[in-house]
Image (tube, rainbow, N blue to C red; front, side):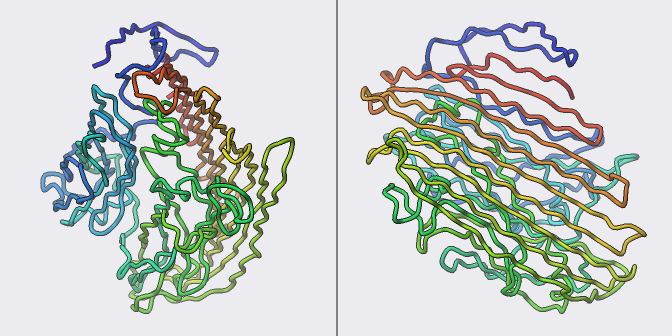
Length: 541
């Protein structure tokens, strides 16, 4: 599709041999065509076993009408499966904004995404996701619902042509059936109440472990899509919020806070006033929006009475009545097959005092808002299972530090430097002689600036970093360890307020995705200039 010629060139690094890098002469500025979108993230690892693929969505999204259909698991590949992989393929041509997509199977959100903005000639892209965790749901026929809300008219001409497939890989030989939850349960009677989502859940009476998933996103193009830019209402800025930019996603069980988490600062492909940043390389997580996971096992003993119990998900800091947050929620339950009912209760529930302080000052002509916030939670519960007494403790600590600076009433330049930290430790005592400890340390950083010259030349520079360190130990034995680093850097400029042919846009971007641990080494970086990939290097795999 692309007119730019490219040749493979050999490359090597001190780390050893690498895959060939793209050697290309990029154009001097963006034209009307560019490379298809891609990311440096690894493809889902698949077993070499027999597989079957089922198409579950085939739709051209041109308005706000959802696609509905029915999924039937493939008879020729009956479970149990070793892996289930979702693949979404999309095409779009013309002019279109970025759009948010949401896919449900059996009332359960299994995939959330945002779309790239197209070229006049058209683009094609694909996204893969490991959805093995939802295998219990996919073992029987289910209704399918998908929406990518879109506007198509004389100006915005891009129709989103989307197909979604599920591929089921059979468990054979050493490729054992996947270790998944026994039940995937959607909320019943879900409803919005102010900024919160409420619903009920009824878990099996022999549940011994419970995880909630919340696909939390600020979106819609308003202030909550860029919630980290908001400032206290007393500060002169176009996006005020009652207490400033601190956001925290809380989940409650029957009125008690059961989990706290930092939302990820998603940047979609029209974000930061500069789509030229994202035409080829999207920001981290833009194509595969991951859920927040909360371990609710300490509460299980209160929930196994066969009755519905209330779950509430709320985003702290959102002004009352302001739209923008979507919070699809479900739970995954593991059962104790040797008993008809597991019993237990809470031992400890300690919610720390929320800190959320924003200070405003005028510093050398710059408006400046400094924010420091954080929260802590500790919950412990016990269960009487077929294997004896089990005590599970969950400790969570979240924090946000940011400095937002801008100049004058026009808010030009406007920039932010922010860090979010999210640590969760789950300790289980009672299975074996030693405790099993699972610790997750997540860190998100965002550093960017938007400026416009008197000649209306808009420039955006941005760095986004998604980091995680996850480790599970049993006594002194490390059962698993994984480290993730997904780093994006970019700068793009264009003439604002003029027809597309006069924008004279230029831009460079790089994404480096590294994943190590558990005998895994993946390290790939992609670099683009003016819409074309100039380097694609994989250092280890």
